Length: 273
Image (tube, rainbow, N blue to C red; front, side):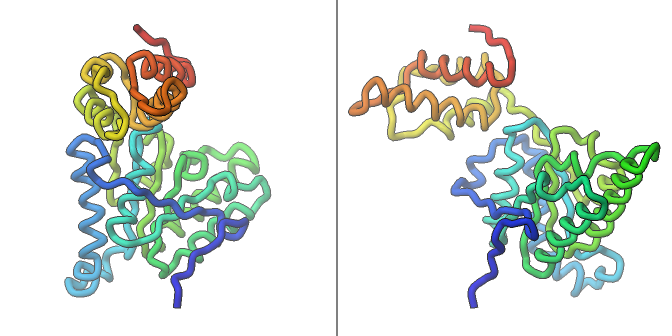
């Protein structure tokens, strides 16, 4: 009587993701939040629209949405929150386990994913979807023909799937236009502005450790960081604080600045101190 939870393997190359965070932890522009609300509205009222209103014969049963924007801006968190809100498991498809150099294998792996998920009330989340939903090219050789064949197969599977399918990409332009025409929504996840960065700092800094010395307004104004960046910085700075004083740890400006420099170095960015 228990719900079926598939094990990550070659036949089902997807892992369940979830979050302990809430919508208040997601910091986005209002327009993006409105588009996300449209997905929730569809999931809540799909039966009414399809069955009671009789639009089943004209509309596809599923819902497809593209999330695009820089890394660390909340795409995966949003997918997890959607599943948490509507009570559906979210499975992130491992693209590296799906794509194969052997003809027919990629289609087989994709078919397994969609077949497992059919009628299971799961949300399929394709992260870094560019590599498999990318733009088709003119056929110059057998590899091009194979890639275009895979794209055509995907179009059929994604359009026929009755559940919610989410794609995430760093760049909307990398996704084949044939897919974008079939998306019910395309949602941009922009890098946070100063006010949003300030909210992210306040959301991320733990109340259980002192950080009174930090000038959060200054940090939000001078350092263009994403929510993921800020989380990494707070984690590193917290360890520095514990190493200095494990009994009464306190986050200080030097800890945060050291962690910010490390985060900038990871992305080969210059920092103005």
